[in-house]
Picture 1 (cartoon, rainbow, N blue to C red):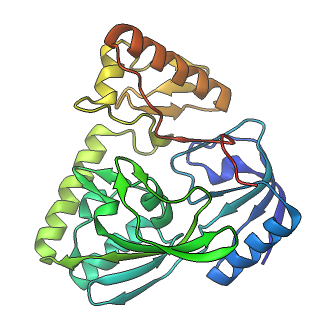
Picture 2: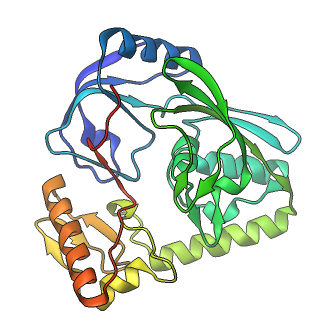
Length: 285
C-alpha cells in the first residue's frame, strides 16, 4: 500500500481545480482499505473519500489530512442478475458489462463519468432513472468495523451513516433485450451530446433540481447563462454546469455559485441547493 505526500488534487478532479493534499491513498483491495482506515484511526488523521472526482470541487488550499481515492479498487462478480461491484468500478464499465450479459436497467445513466461508490452515495440519476433503484445492499467500513447496510434513497442522496466508507455494492438487474438496451444507450448519448458541455472541465450539474423546476432553466431565466468570474463560467450549453475555461480557482467557482443562488432567490424566490461536493467542508477525524 503506497501513500503519496503533497499530492496535487487538481489531478483527481474533473474540474482540474484544487490545492494539494497532505497525503493521498490509492487502495486497490478491500484489505488495503482496511489498512488505510486503521492507519487513520491510529494516527488520528482527518480524511475524506473520493472516486473519480467528477462531482467534486477541491479547495485552493487543498486538504490537510488524507484523501482516499477508490479509482484503483475495481472489479465485479456476477451471479445471475446480482452483481457485486467494488466501489471504484466505473459506472460506464458496469453498464458495458450489463450490455454484454443481457441484464439491464441503468442504460439511462450512460455518460455519468463517476464510480459505483459515488453513484450510490449521491444516488446519481438521469432521464428518470436513479442508481438507488437497483441497490440491494452495500458493504463498507464504519468506525473501523465492517458493516452491511440496506440503504434507503432520496433525491441525490443515500441514507447511509455519516463516515460510512463504501467498499462494495450489490446490485440487482433484470433481463433486457440487447437491441432495446442499445437503442436506449444511443438515444441517451445523443441527448447528452446535444444538451451538455461534454469535453469541457466541469463537475457535472452544480445544483439539485428544485421540486417541479429545472435548475438550469432557472439560471438561464435570470440571465446568467455564459456569465464568468475569472475562468469559471456558467456553461453556454447547459446553465446548470460551471466550466473551467482555463485556470479557474475554487474561489472563482464558489463566488459564481453564490451569485447564482442570490440571483435566483431574488428573482424567482427559490433557494438552489448545491449538488457538487466542496472539499473540505465536513471531514471525518
